[in-house]
Image (cartoon, rainbow, N blue to C red):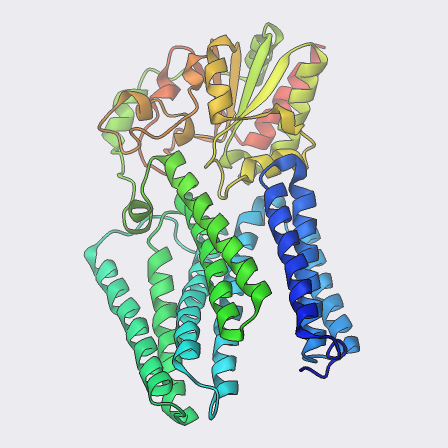
Length: 477
């Protein structure tokens, strides 16, 4: 039995603490399924993890109470600083880094446990779980670094095609697996192997998995990052759960399993929202449209408008739907958009927001941005809710969205996005598209919506354009 601060208690007391923590995890995850209760869910899950960490550290006397308190204060200060200093538009890359840190921690803990058990505790079960945790954790860490770099503009955003990259992926993944098998044979089957005999195999495993993680994520286009972030989140949970088996820690197993399952479910939801398979996201890419295709669709068919003309259209509207996209996030236009919505509602206009599941750079990106601008959650409508209402909508304002409103998904069976669920904004009486230019979205294909008879293009930065629209509306009301 442990001799720590809680060591005089029976092991069942620690398991009880883990059970309470697991209940907190489950309830927190349940609350995070809805924006209105997401904050409470985050606090509940954090409370469960705090309980599990404190109980584990004190029961096994890993740190003294004073050092534990100092560590928690330092970690809390860093977390608070990140929460306050990082812009909401940069949250996707921060989430990606958090996923990576979880995976990296699993790799280090698994390796440390192997070192600690050398000479007496090595066995097939320990080495197997440690090898799995090392591979998954390392892939998660380095893959997350690349994903965060793409989202932050530090790594190229264009998809890379070619069999060479896929061959290299297979080679390095196989190398990591073979190193793991050697580790299992050397220590698990042969028994008490000396440290120098197996440790190089673990580092070969880590090195091969690191290169595989980079090669896996680097060729994927930045617009596919919502799927990649969700998948990496699932992998970080899997790494944590496997590390839980390495440490024989119930709380880590439960927490990791919940994160892994939730992340995997979210990954498939994202894929379904894009009408793509996970394999296609990881190993394929969207086809690119040619300049000739864009010229054929756009030339002579684009109607440009101004904030003053849009204000006149809004003045006669009874129902308006605003569709945000990544362009709104980049320009940080959410506050101007929210102000416009408030002004319209003050004048009796019914205003709602149409949210596509993959708009932005991570799941829930648009919801988070609008919530930051104090937009009522009840005004945010998911695709299935808002699509039937477009035919009764007077004006749709699209700010920074592209492929998620492309009618080719419905009308062109040969399109790369054919079958992808999109917001059917073209059913509205008038459509205003606010974009910097006619450049394509992540699919690389033109958007026929821009050339529709009922579509007008409001070119310019989203924040400035929305503020100009707010000013024009204020001048006349």
